[in-house]
Amino acid sequence: MLYRLLITLMLLQPLYADNVPAEQSPTTSESKTITYTDAWILGIVEGITEFLPVSSTGHLILVGHYRDLDQESPLTRKDGSLIYHKKNPTQPYTLKEAVDAYLVFIQGGAILAVILLYGSKLWSVILGLLGKNPQGFLLGRNLITAFIPAALVGLLLDGWID
Image 1 (spheres, rainbow, N blue to C red):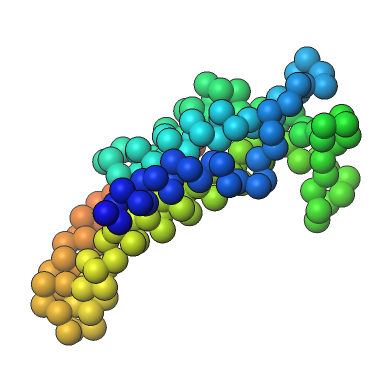
Image 2 (image 1 turned 120 degrees about the vertical axis):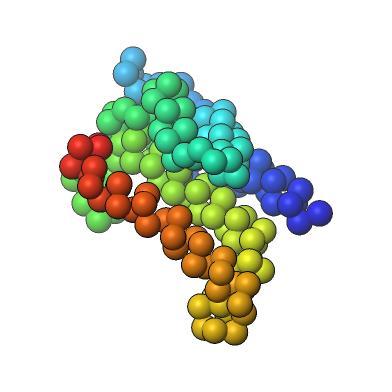
């Protein structure tokens, strides 16, 4: 029951993303914005790939690239005026920055769903590391052991992988 509720919430999440402007006609030929359709597609890709043994972030990057959401073009309001950063009012906010902010938001939702689904296992690992749950300790040890090779490869290839 909880699993179905979380999946439904993840699929509906783009509807409630206030930071995503409605689809609008471009003011110039090179102007683009994130649309509700883009938000739906990104949300569905995140929701599906988060629970699969594939890179959800990598899939979001690919989808963003193929939907031309990785452009550095400035975002504009409906009246055509530029949207500027709050901390740096001379620098316009770009499409890529808006999409990246949205991706952080939906990935946070997916991480929360994973924590809710596997919360009891995470709690048993915490108790195991404190010496209060032998099975949790074994699971934690196995997770750390499985993580070490991936971390080492990542550190060794950091300069080579972009």
